[in-house]
Amino acid sequence: MIAKKPSTMKHLHTPPAGLCLIILLTGIFMTSLTTLSPAQEPAPSGKLKAHAIFASNMVLQRNKPIVIWGWAKTDANVTVQLGKEKAEAKAAGEKGRWEISFPAREASAEPQTLIVTAGDEKVEMSNIVVGDVWVMSGQSNMAFSLKGVQEEDIESAQSNLPQLRFFSISPNEQSGPQDDIPAEKIETQGWAVSNRETSLNFSAIGYVFGSRLQRSLDIPIGVIKNSRGGASIEAIVPSHKFDQHPLAKRYAEYMKQKISEFDREAASLKVWDNQLARAKSKGTPEIDWPKKPVNGDNLTSWNIPGMSASDMGSIHHGMFGVFKGYNIKGVLFHQGFNNTLSGNCRPKRYRALMKLMVEGWREEFNDPALPVGVISGCGGDDSQNAENFEIRALGGSPYIYEAQRLGLADVGDPENTAFLPSYDIQIPGLHPAKKREHGERAARWALNQVYDSKVDWESAKLLSAEPQGDMMILKFDKSVMPDDWSPIVEGFSIAGEDGKFYMAHARFPLLKGKKHGSNAKSSDATTIRVWSPLVKEPKAVRYAWAVCPLGNLKVSGKPWLPLQSFRTDNWDYPEVEDPAIIAETGDKKASADAAAFNEERRIKEAEMGKQIIERLKTLTEPIEQAAK
Image 1 (cartoon, rainbow, N blue to C red):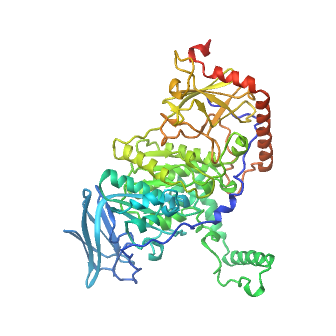
Image 2: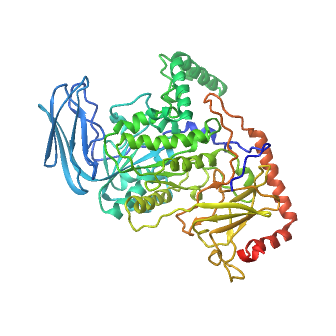
Image 3: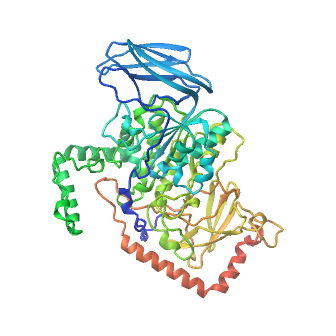
């Protein structure tokens, strides 16, 4: 049952306290990496050059045509030799672009050499292998390096993996499509072979994911990290896709207008005025005050419409679409925080953009079944618990996580896409140091679904949610239980017609013939009864619905398979279609109401302690007995 929206519902929405300033902390974890293979320097016009994605130590995608391209003097004859195979092309057009294609190859760890020649010019690359290439897209939690995570010591100690290779792109948002990646934007200075030094400085999720695949499949694995701190999904979606959904199209029109109206000098002076005011307020000596800008030299990409990491297509232009043509196996995506901030929180638009993003990647990389795994939104607040439950349920974060899951489902390809919940391994802070779990779970999905390996991975679906007296009865297609088999279910809230959600009690009914259950194995874990003494006629439930939610259900009780957050209502986050208008969320009132609900529940449950204990006993009655 899906609850209908009440006419006088009390919305409780506010961004997580103290997190809005985080949007400024971008690129912090984009550290430089050391490698044996330097990237090619940008070639002068007319000089022979291969695209920067091609370098020594690279992994070429197996079982797909191998396309190699670059630039030379217009009309020059270019010869490309990969191992024993040769192909020729003529540099054409104003830029002298050339391109060749070799037939698809099977995976091979045998080092190959790539030689490109044009007249007397020559470019040579070595130690090239053929395997699978995965892209790590998203924002700073995807870029977060291995050296910053809890398990970096044991992971880096095992990282001498010659057939695991890294390629890392630093922030390079651009206002339009780019032809190549500047050498200074390649943190790995080309492709880097995995070892203790290179692994510590690479994406933690990317390293763990790639290392598990490489060891399991015993083939070369290449991992390209192109995530950008502070990114909004709008900047990651290919710009040609925005016309394909009304909400996206309206946003695109809004952005085009902002770009056309942008006054660089006025924006520069405004930034300078703010900088000057801050310096004066801090008592900074006049000699150290910021100098008046010249030609907007104090502006960053964040100040320029169309170039900001929040703006339409900017990250895709310089960090993903820039190497389209370099065939890949799949994409792992981890993003969401910047789209949960109150002014940017638009779940309906996010859902549409998620679908367009996946479709756009598949079009640009010429693979209609390109596997895409989405790790749910990143960044956390203080954990939700029984004492702060209603307060921590505030905000738009869970709506964005839901939009990620639903947008991916809208693609209509469950065999090649997966939503990977992550709420159960979050800890406080913008950049939680738990990252290994994300990479391992993603590897489980890929090995099970993409590679058809005998590695466990599955998900569960809510089949029904129906009121029965003063409780809600939930039915699932698989058993869902805590991984310690506890019979106590945590993380549910329940509401009546007024839309006020209170923390709820939840239990499994005992299996037929069982008189008591010390653990969930004695119960029907496909059924959950949800109840609260504060809600007499329930209409809806929510599970794990917060920034860093309480919730202990795992599919089949397996630690690596958390049940996704969900709700049975349609009481949506306030959102307007006009991109120039921010919906009124009533933050102050919402916070006050949530605190009042929280106190009301705790007081009432303390007063009703004995009655609650007796009522909870009935929640575990076998289904046949409960029906009577």
